[in-house]
Length: 351
Image 1 (tube, rainbow, N blue to C red):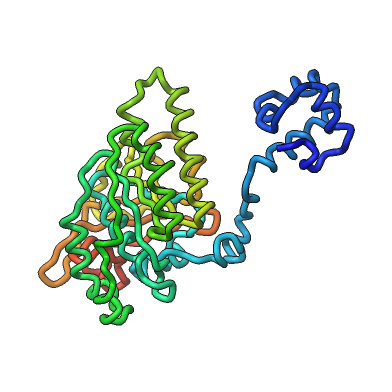
Image 2: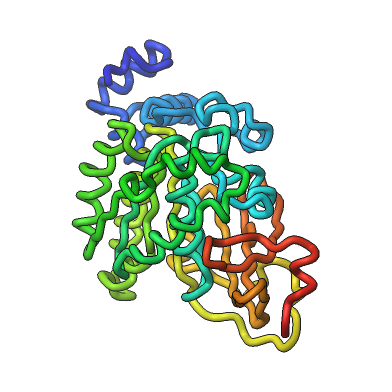
């Protein structure tokens, strides 16, 4: 980018040229004090230069939380959401996942994270009037084999889960033809997948949901504790790719994450406020700063019954989001999928 294209005074532009700074990246890789020394500019001029360079590198302006809360961001299609497929959980999420941004779903093994991700892969295929995005999903597995049999079970029971959708519409949708599955065994193959195959599917309109299950697996196995700096660099590069795909194609991105440790067992009904302090998703603060929405799925000690089905009680909680309150809803995993529990169903919980 030519320096004259930036919103800078001719005096600052001339100083930058004398310092032989060739591009905006050169400016952003140098500290403010070094820029003052190289260019001879004042502190306020250097700050103006850094702001202009950062703006030039950013393809989209940041979205204020207030606009996101009101659903008034044009880039995010007026607050368009991807429905979870359950009214109770959609109420918690104010309609579902935001289409522009990275959402993390963390929890212990067996909490129901993959179940919810599969449900979203089907929900995205519905028209927008039924909470979908009228497109498919790409599901990237980094550790376990894709649960094809469970996906087929969810497909066969869609009419039970989505009673709000006309049965004729459900029967017309070819769900399994629009879930694209990728397996990546290392970070290199993951990056190739995200930089080549996924953008092609998005550009063709074949998919409108990206799921990575799980984000922690590869970063945990490929780096030792002493490699924290390289791991952080790779993590930020991975995050940057996800954000680019989300913003460029207006696509929700869901990353499944693990927990560092389990909650200590608590006897009786767990009525503690959402997100007790001993819950910590993997990958630490470097990753936490990269996600817009963090959700937590917890598996509780109680069980809930419905007819001839029984399920361990789950709880989906909002850890943080710019447009959501910290709150949670009880849920259960049934044959047809993940459903939030209503007040009457919560009274049937068995200890």
